[in-house]
Length: 251
Image (cartoon, rainbow, N blue to C red; front, side, top):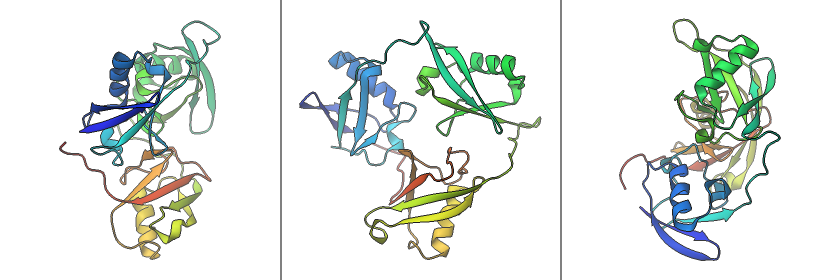
């Protein structure tokens, strides 16, 4: 599909694929404009396009969409050359670790094992609701930077994930302007509840008509089959609801 990049006071057209990663588009722009990837912020209607996602994760991006490119100064160097601080969160605690900027997922697991004793084979690492599944990839390829939060879950010996004790969450659901005049409604849920559980609750209370909806948390489209915990939803967080579906095919 052809989109319009708005940058530095001028517009130009660019071909992108529905399954093309945001990071790949930034690399193209680096070649065309000479702007380093780390200095680029891409956004559509105020929604930032996150490096770890593909264009198909943003149904608001269609043929002819304008994508704003903002140039920001590169972050100052860390305290130690090639180093950064990240926060590693467990179910009952969190620790701050210094890692190399070129660290891989595998080497991070090894460091967590050394520091905390957690068995490497049982670790599942998540960042912003996305599993760091490819152990050979660098952390930077997942968009991880200074003071990013990595969540550690454990899987059982039969490779099933442990289900940590559920917690109650009070979450605010903000409707789009076409739903209930953009009302904001508070729900009490458990963090083990899925997005589909929330959708069905809203339908049962006749808050919304039966239709297709998108739930968004921290600028990311949520998966209906995944839990609020999986998405990193915390007590007091706000979810946004829009009518629509995610289209995953074609150009």
